[in-house]
Length: 251
Image (cartoon, rainbow, N blue to C red; front, side, top):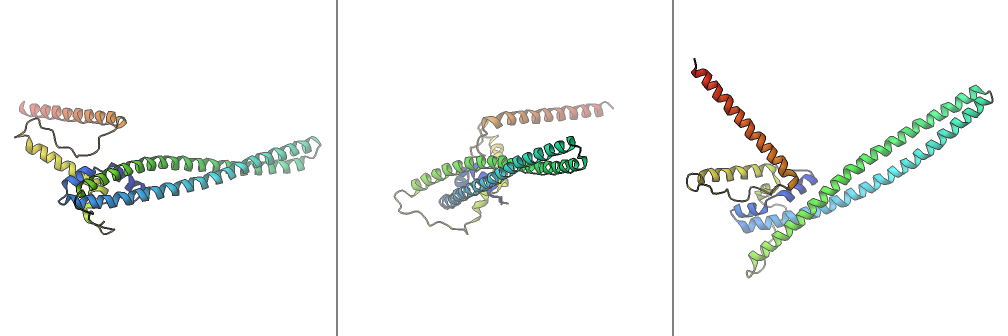
C-alpha cells in the first residue's frame, strides 16, 4: 500500500531506487515516463508543503510572541498587586492587603498560563523545524532524481522525435514499485533468489545491484551492529540445538 502522508510520500520517493524500477520494468520507456510524472508531482507537492509549513510556523511564532508579551505584563501586574498588599498591610489594613494578595495570585495564575502557551508553541516550532529540514532534504533529493530521469529520457528519445505523452493521473500500477515500502522487500527477495540460484554455477559472484540505496555513515555502524547481533543470535541457537542433540544421544 502506498503511503498517504505528504512527508511519507516525499521521503519514499527520495529513497526509491529508480534505476531498479526502470531496469526491471517490462516496458522501461513507459516506466520512465511514469516516474517522470510522479517525481514532477512530488517536487510540486514538496514545495507546497514547505511553503505551508513555513507559513504555519510564522503564525505560531506570532502567537508565541503575543503570549510572551502577555506574560511580561502579568509579571508587572503581579508585582504591583503584591507591593500594594505589602503597603496596606504595613499601614494596618490587613483585609485590604489580603485582597491585593489575591489579585497578585490571579495575575500569577495568568502568568503561568501564558508561559505554558509560550512553551507549547516552542515545541510546535521545534517539531515543524525538524519537518522542514526533512522536507528540504527530500526536495533536494527529488530534484536530483528528476534531473537524472530527464537525462535518461533525453538519452532514450534522442533522434526519435518527441517522447511519449505523459500518462496523467490514471497511470499504471508501476507506481507501487516506488510508493509502496513493501515493494522494496519484494525486490530484495527477488535478488536473494537470484543469488541463491547462482551459488551452484557462479561461486563468489555478488548479487546484482538494485537492492536499494547505500546506507549513510551514520546508519552503517548501526547496521553492522545489528548484523553482529543477528550472527551472534544464530550462533547461540546453533550451539543450543547441538547441545540438545548431544543430550538426546546420551540416553
